[in-house]
Image (cartoon, rainbow, N blue to C red; front, side):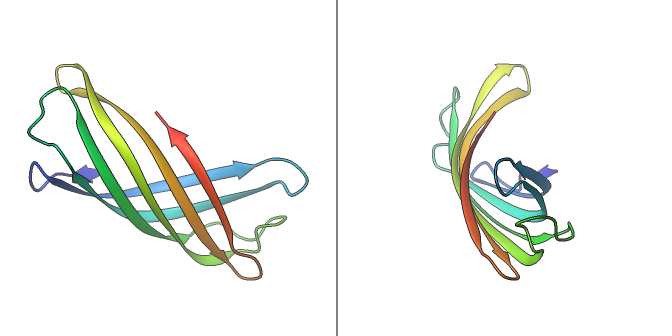
Amino acid sequence: MEWNPSYYASLGLSYEQTSFYGNQAFTAGTLNAEGRFFLASFVNDHSPYISAGAGFNLLPASGYWKGGSFGLKIGLGDKIPIAGPVLLDLGFDYHWMSATKADFQYADARV
């Protein structure tokens, strides 16, 4: 869910669930409050932005994930118009999650 109070900024609420596979397979999920600042909102074809967010873990401990209190993320992205009001949101985020016994960090690309 995203709200745009101006051409230059948006505020949002989202849920992310990420699964990791390998020796230490586990799933972590957070409910996030996020903000985006559009760097060039005056450009009609693209809307590049920087984003930041903070969230709280909603999933219980499983495998390596010992449960935890919160996560932080920063990112870069671009909203590209497809047709009418429909936009393609391309982005890269870097996450840091605090766990009870082990913090971890990861990056992801999204479409």
